[in-house]
Image (cartoon, helix red, strand yellow):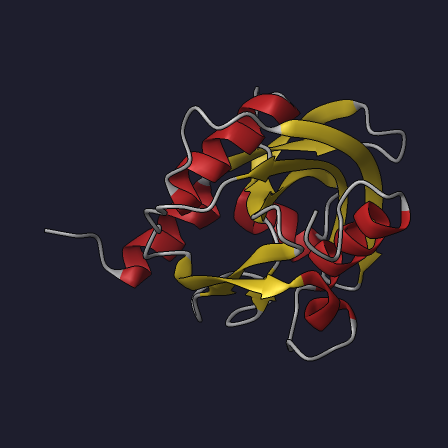
Length: 181
């Protein structure tokens, strides 16, 4: 029997995540629910899946997500678990959310994101993969490739603001192409 959405939400709230200071040094760990409630600074991973033709894989987040429910997310990823490295977290999240295993993830850069609900140091990764994908139903409703230009010019909304910030930087630094290569 598959876990109910309520079970998945409760399990996620109990997950222990890495907590860091404003210099991105590990200072402890906390349950995910406390991290969200107190807006503690944490680490997160962002895995952008590209198709090599100027498109990025866009996910529709489930309505049960603890932050930005039902938004479009431009990257697989999430909070880094306690005791986990960025690389381990990125591989775990790509496998959990999209079924990506054995796909090389290219580390790109780290950045800081902050808004009233979220403060995190993120590490961005890219990979090229066109499927198939195995979605995690508790987190991802559907996925589809969209032109990067369509995302950047606002034709796809609403979009998670942290992943949009990271995509803009990937493009600005010439790390992804917005048209076929």
